[in-house]
Length: 146
Image (cartoon, rainbow, N blue to C red; front, side):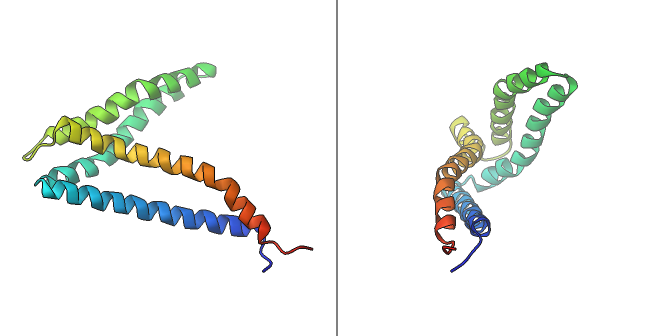
């Protein structure tokens, strides 16, 4: 089998992407069922849907002030806001949305919902980093000798 290594590598990369998406969907199904058993499925859905605008507000709160500053100070502003304001907005936004309406979520449940998405993304990135050398080795080994 004579495949160009980069084509095989990117094919493996795409397969990993599909597996990550499938795992994320499985996580969401597991979460929904867990909250459904407690009678809080609507609150779960409300928090999950509110996660998109919360993410946009959080990103804008970090990026806009950093872009308003020039030079190396912009990097300092970016990291300063990323590690102080961003977690407060992200966690606080999930907590506030979880507390609204009937069948309100507890603080622990809201925290779980706030941490699963970034935790999953970090875990997928770390796994991809560990699997990248293996994928390149497979891609090179599939190349026929000249």
